[in-house]
Image (cartoon, rainbow, N blue to C red; front, side, top):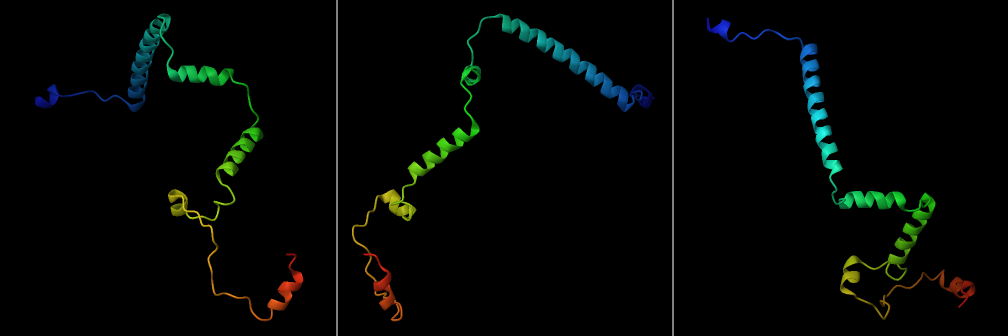
Length: 120
C-alpha cells in the first residue's frame, strides 16, 4: 500500500521541459514588470551607466591612431640608456660613470685593419 501512496505518474522529458519553460517565462514577466516600475522611479545613474554614456558620446578614434599612441608611450617609457640595464639596477637607481676595464684585446690579425677602417 505504501507504494500506491508514493506513486507519481511518469511525465515525459518533453512535457517537463515545457513546464519549466512556462514557469520560467512567468517569472521573467514578473521581473520585467517590476523593472518597469523601478525604471519609472527617478534614480541616480550608476558609474557604469555614466561610463557607457560617455563612451557613446566620445568621438571615435581610428584604430591605427590608438596603436600609434600606445607605441609612443612604450617608447617613452623605455629609453635607450635604460634598455641594457638590469631590473635590479633600474630599481636601485645605479648609474655607472666609468666603463668596465677588461683585459680583452682584439686578435693580432684584426689590429692593423681596425686603424684603417675606423673613422675616429
